[in-house]
Amino acid sequence: MELERPIYLDLVAQDFPTLKIIAGHAGWPLMPEMIAVSRRNSNIYIDIASV
Image (tube, rainbow, N blue to C red; front, side, top):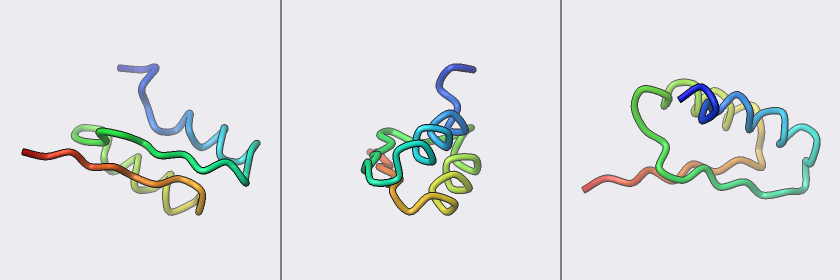
């Protein structure tokens, strides 16, 4: 799970500010980190899949 942490998207979003990033299937236990990263970067979007 370490390689799937949303904090790594933060680095990509900062290096490529015009790139739109969609984080698919964001969920527990990494949701709080994903929310923090997406609030910091306006080019990251969260997709939450639920049944």
